[in-house]
Image (cartoon, rainbow, N blue to C red):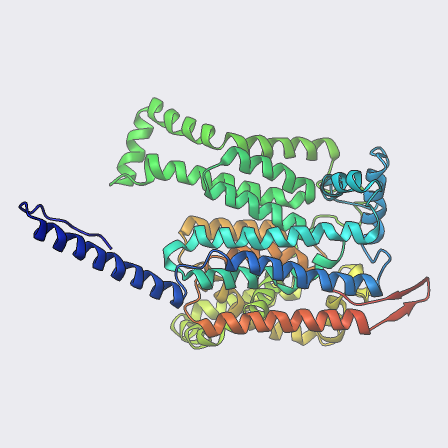
Length: 489
């Protein structure tokens, strides 16, 4: 509230009245501010740190539970933990050829545990200490997502909703579960999100540096470096060209004056230089290495697996379930309105499923993953289910559109391109590949209803609780391994 004072003639009485009026106005302003604060906006500054502390404390308890029943390396940890321990012993020349990712996770663990080890006088590179790495990353992920939501939505979204949305995204079951194991996913996702946050804060050089770190965690993160690079280029073109009153006229003028076109391209090169260096460096790495992956390439050969897009749409639909009921009817109406197009998409989807469904040997052999049961109990046993799921995939794709519909055409087209690049080349159905594109799409959406957010919270908590219970209670033995086996995502 602003107080507007008018100059008045002299006299103590007028001066006293003016002072009294200002005091009353200030009290009214304070009262209104207090009222708004009690209603939830602005957000009390002390609440969010408590949320982070509570999130970390509960996650730590879950980590202890997981460690209690599984104190030895599990599945991919069999490769990651011994390799990290070699790095702790400064044996940087030794490398397990079964590992296909770069050593970013191990270097981060050394940086995190090294100072603590020095203070305590003993090395912290055991299973529990290494798993702590992802607990720390999960806490920072909550903070990063919160900052991203504030930047993306600002005044359009209530601060309390921002806080709850950030918590929900941090609890995304497929992501949250790996907080308790020594996998690359949590830290890799965190670094990608930090890179995006830096980009949004107009720090391309720092964002590009974080892109290098992201690639060190997982090579496919180069896709999201390219995503930001193209967005940056489009932003530059938008300022210099696309915002002109007559676009075609502007383009013709630029073509008629080569120096003008060169000037625009020079701006693009300068602004995208940092990202370009990272992309060029990665290209040189691939040329030198002969492949995107390091180590054993036999199980990670690139292919064209278009049904992965359908699996992603199903993944998106399942984990955005609290928001879907209100969109079922509009989806049906849209299909009726554009019946020919809907039928064409359905037919193409069925053809893709029929001709391009690929099954990785791991999917058929490793019963420690939930996808094994999804495939062997449903998709693999009843082949007709694959075709019946095509309309479900279509609805999932529609929901993705709903979540990103307020973004520009360029953003949507680029998101689709990066989604294709990040999931289609994989033969293996692995839900972890869907984490980053899911988060990017979900963060674009503003929920106007409290009940949806709270149902999402309870929904994710329920799934996480059931997953933890399944891991603890369901055990079995493989003939060639003496340890008890368990089920994870």
